Image (cartoon, rainbow, N blue to C red; front, side):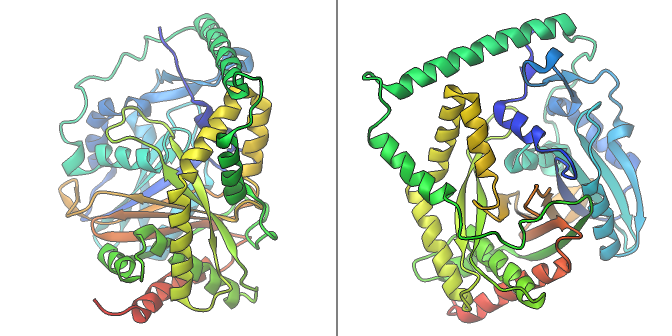
Length: 454
């Protein structure tokens, strides 16, 4: 029986869950009308056949000689994963409930996801979906949301039956497969090292010079640590800011030389962090942000992480919002023209083929707060009028967990004509997270006032 294991990238993500840092991402869907947990179970249950990964649990390999394997959970129960989240009275109470869920680990003895159904007093319902990041990056998580919950996308998808949970390899078969996996990995590393040395036994050449240029742009240390480079604690706080997607597109198109929606997103985050720093008595310096870049192909099968990144400087010390946006747009154009995200992906893959020790060293450095202070992801979602359980989808928000020495994370998602900034932070390290959300709103208004109409 073939055994599907965590990829090297997914295994690295799983290993990040330690200490006070949990490992999941989160989508918050606010739906018009009152829908109880049984209605969501009836919706989700039949659609799991289209997402069999949501029926799998992680099983450790004997002696840890290979990454964990995905195997069907023999004790899967929909009631364990789609849960009654109670009732809250207002948005602040919902934010607190979501923050509490962001603090709580998913149970590794069962599939790594949960959907909490929260009733709101104004005849609305919130579905809080958590997915472990080792199973899904932003692009895959959006695919799961569409298939699992949206009326338009999930209907009729997948097979009619769930695979038999009793058909699974035993401990001896897992161990034998792990030995084969180790042999294949060693062969790939040897072949990669031989290719890197080249015919003359050296590794010099134009490709190496280009790679060094990418390393200098993306992985060179900054001038100092930001106020966000603090040890992560166990408490979380969340905040949200939303804007019409069309307004952001209009801002991007009005910038001289053109900008992208993501450039405007980064400029808005720059304004939000700048506002937080000045209001809390700290000085605003340049801030380096990690921007994930999806490497997924259209209609790519399976669920797994497949992305790279680029590092962009946010000039917080520049007082003019329009100048900040223009500087950000110019830098992202440079990074894209040089294909830095693809080059970094190739670099880490190459290091993994050559030496696991070199790969670990590079990964450790890439996560350093000296390389970047803040992770800002932006995932496009479905547009147009969307419904869940026959009722209009009023809002969709995204959140991602912080990391050690990175106590604020921003996850942006667009859906149903709205763009949402989801902020998750260490509650003790980032006081007044609402100031960041307010600053994002103010920055977008300032950009709109500074740019010519039309």
